[in-house]
Length: 509
Image (tube, rainbow, N blue to C red; front, side, top):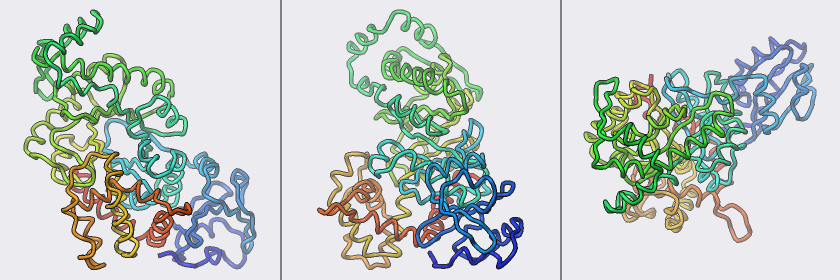
């Protein structure tokens, strides 16, 4: 809970000793001081505090304080500067502490995307991953999510970095420009400092090929240049490739042309983005290929073809996201036959191992049924994306601490489901959601365990956050943020429990 304690009371009555002050701040029980944030650089001391619902950076003495903007005041024998958590102050702090800068994870370590749509979840995410062998991607947002939440990438980076400093988390974190489709957006994300780019190739994947007749496929295939057709046929047609695992991938004539037509433009797009934007950035970047936003599952042949072609073109990527068999819908468990998923996922994992990159699992929130399979066959080298489930845990907290506000949000979401469904593929039946009037206040948090209710609230985050009165005031956003700020410790605990379950089942220790 937020308290009114004053952080200034921690300062000693007399004397000016940074080492002693640092020790006092790091060990104080004063709840207005974030103990883990206490850092010293030479003759300058830094730490974060809370004043009411607002967090601030405090800089004590030293020449480094000149790099920060804020209000100067005297606290006992110390000159301090109390600074707002602005972008410029964040950048000044990153210049002093390299662990505040988003980093690439690489191909060898497990990573988890932790999309924070509200900018309040990172303390809980850090509490979850601390002392586990996994790299957290703490700043992860798609353009769609930015549009629906009214945020921008700078705000996403700010929120993550300030929380990392607040929690003193120096083990490294990443920032993912998620599901980017436009070259300008990729360039913008990299210029801002994102360490990961998930390239969404869906607009360049021809998902209509599956419904073409054989004659139509032949006609479209013949439109490719003779040189390109010769390359594909000489390299793949009727060829068998043996993976490092011993499994074989064979390309027969049956679906060869269809496969080429589905992916050929996506390969060109990925190569162009890599050569013109990713490679010229001249720094370590986790470049991820997303080919999952299609209706048809990715076959082992499709997967091998895409990966082998990219590598032959000199495209360096760290992870690839296939479209797996079954359904990975938002906010609920896997839909499909887990045995079939295991049989096919094993081959996908072997292909990734063969080439040396990580498998990426999109819409990975709450897929508890298949986490064991993912952890086992990737041998702990994977990337799993979560986002909406973190929002749902925030809503769970609202239901716990302010049932009236939750009821308003729930009712509004149900009235606007048609609008929310435009952005996400979900198949829940609204009739399966328990009637709100039949539930006591104590039962409301359990709605976040009910699949239909979870999906309805999951896809409605934009509708809820952007809802305004006729006078232009937010209907829910301000009250929602206030409750979560007041109950930050509870939100952190709920995230630690929920995301921790993900990591446990993925065998992340």
